[in-house]
Image 1 (cartoon, rainbow, N blue to C red):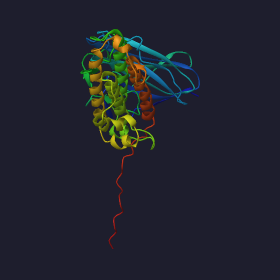
Image 2 (tube, helix red, strand yellow):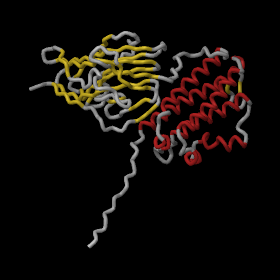
Image 3 (cartoon, rainbow, N blue to C red):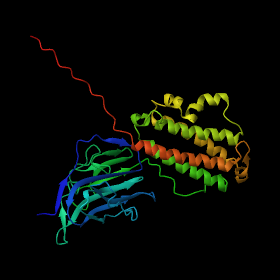
Image 4 (cartoon, rainbow, N blue to C red):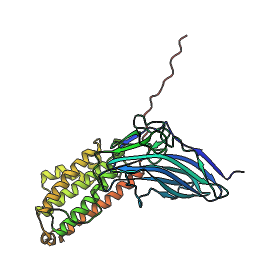
Length: 374
C-alpha cells in the first residue's frame, strides 16, 4: 500500500484580486498524504537583472498542515538570488503525517527583471531516494498570456489569486530548458525605507530618531490598508466598533492635534473642532461620517498631516524636544512619543479588525417564476 498520495490542486476559476505591492510570486499546490516523514526538494533556475541593491528573487516552498499549525517555509530570504547568470537553486523541506499540502514557486521583490525556468519537485520514496514528481508547465514552454502563467497561480495560495500592478509577466527566449522562461518585470516601485533609526537630513539627532520611527509606523499602516476594498474599509465589526477608514482618519487627526499643541501651544479652536472632532473622538459621529470614501481619501489626509509634522519638527532642535508642555506636564518629546505609540496601538486594532472581516456577500437577483398562461 503506498504511503504517499499526491493530488494536483491548481485552480483556474478563481477571481483574481489586483493589488499594489513591492513584491510578487507564483505557485503550484499539491495536496499531500503521507504516514511517515519524507524529505522533499524544490529546484529551479533563476537569474536577476536589476540596478537596485535591495532587489532579489528566490525559490520558495511552504507546507500547510491539517490542523493549521505553522509548517515548513523557506523563501530564500537569507540567501537571496541576485546573479545575472542562470543558476540552479534548491529549497529542501520535510513532510509528515500532519502535512496537508505543499506549495512552491518563485518570488521577486522591487524593480528589475526576474527570470525563472525549469522547476523540479522531488520527494523521498520508501528507500530514501528522491523521485521526481510532475510539475505542470515546469519550464514555461506554454507561454504567458494576458499576464497569467498557464498551470500556475499568482500569489502564494491556490485559493487567493493575486495580481500585482507593478509587475508585468511575459515569456522570454532566455532559458536553460526548452525555448522559453517566465519573466517577471517590476517597475515604478518605491523601495521601503531602510530599517534604520535616525539619520534624517535636516533634523537634529533626537528629532531625526522620532521622524524615522513615525515614518516607519505610518508605512506599516499604509501597507496594511492600501489594497482594501470599499466594503472592507467600511465594514463595522459591531455597533460599538469603528470602521478601518475612520481609524486611519483618527491617526491623522490625533497627529494634527499634537501639531497645534506642541508647535503652537494651544488646543483645537472652534473651526478646527468642526473639522476634526468626529475623527478625534471616534464615537457615533465618526461612525456616521467616515464611510463611503476610498482608502486613498484617508491616506491623502494622513500624508498631508505627516508632511506638516516633518516640516515643523525639522525647524526645531533637541533642546525644544526637552521643553515641558505645562498643561499636561509632558515634554515635547513625550508628546511625539505618544503620537508614535498611538499609531502602533491602532495598527494592532486595524490588523485585528481586518482579519475578522467576513467575505463580501454579493447580492443575487431573485428569479421569479413566470406565470404559466393557459
